[in-house]
Length: 321
Image 1: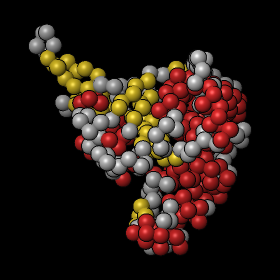
Image 2: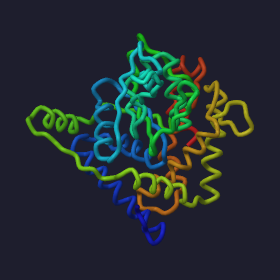
Image 3: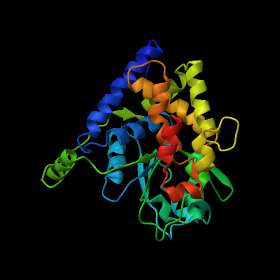
């Protein structure tokens, strides 16, 4: 078990571990710095992340690499239209003694890669929803607790909508971050092609263990926050709610619904962790801004006018910042 003489010492240890994680992941993932930052922050904040990007942008490889540098049990679930809830949670079978025995499904792991999560029907998505929120699953009337730490890192393809089931807003809201992956820069793509077409194999070292992650999650919660930063985070969320007392102009014009209180909680947690990994002991407004797009983009429901005029969620968030 980790022990430090004070939280300042623990904060420095977290920053060091974070830098080690980044260096190890960079052996496999070239570029995508902001995406790696977001996923690691969500892990230290005990949150889930949804990665959205075109095919071939290394979403699955990124999550798999992160699972390799963390000494945790990893499970990959490939979501398909015929996937049933029991395929995720597990099911009861009759054993040789003619007694019911529960066989655990792939959800019983620390890191879950939910690949192409929008390819499965709402019934199966709901099975994952309980696990994400309650850190437990219910089957045959019995509740089974999941091991801590527990993260769902999901991927989604934004262009191929045939045969997909949009994630319900309730499930989207369970994700701390919605992270967009873009094409790599030219120099990065050169390096990707060079390194992946040779015979060089890379093995990743384990950097963090389960107990260390749980300790750092508690450390992030203990980070003090100035009143003005708290006020900024809550007022930022309030600006997204159309036709309310604090709503922003863009919200009234382009949004159907804004973000709920969970957005404010995630903004503050994300800002705390962002401050720690940058070597600060308390977040400022810049730390809130740094995580704002990832926290808010999937919580804003645009109206028809926004869709017609091509006003993106990012543009609306930028107006609030």
